[in-house]
Length: 163
Image (cartoon, rainbow, N blue to C red):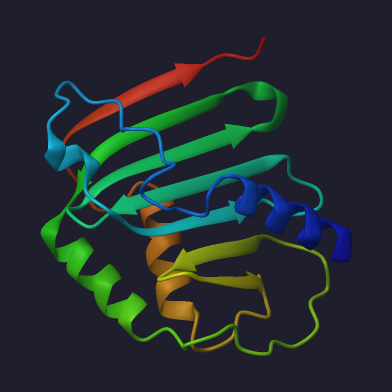
């Protein structure tokens, strides 16, 4: 489990951890500056030891969102959409309640999903079954978005089949 955490954190750090300068522009029908708003939060959900899934979400300050669902050798899917106003408001409220730094958490069993959340320069980590209370609202909100919640308007979907 320790090596998984180190590997995931290294990948997350190498990817730029949600800084607006290194994120690729969102694939939309328009390339206006509105779609390049600063990144509000990024998150990842790793399916666990027995599941080869890695879901990622990036939410920009104006509500534009990208969900990236990777399914091991079974391909991946990107969804770009605008987060509904109500869901963006709920997400911001949950993010505003995050502690200033990673809270101590109880030992995890190594089973189930693990979560990474990057907000305002702080990276938070948790494992299903041992999510610290201060992280739960934000992780729950990001999981709901990954699972299809909060989509407002047209969703641009790109599916990549396995090679």
